[in-house]
Image (tube, rainbow, N blue to C red; front, side):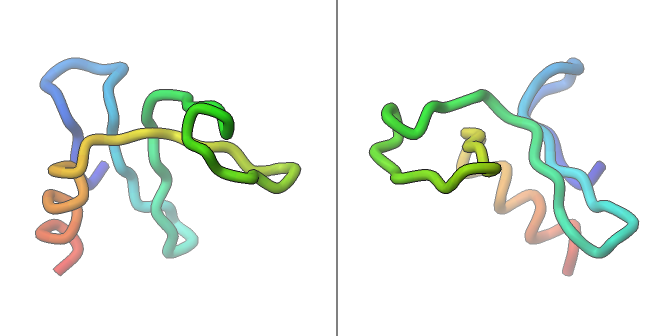
Length: 60
């Protein structure tokens, strides 16, 4: 776990995988809600913007 948006479990969190990628846990957002044309096999999650600044500090 690199960063999370709350002190409890079940909230937006960003993890670093053993494959050198980031895994994002967030709130499900439909493509229609986001106004995005989403390809098959992909999905959208929504996370707080400040969570990304926490991740930037954790990976630098």
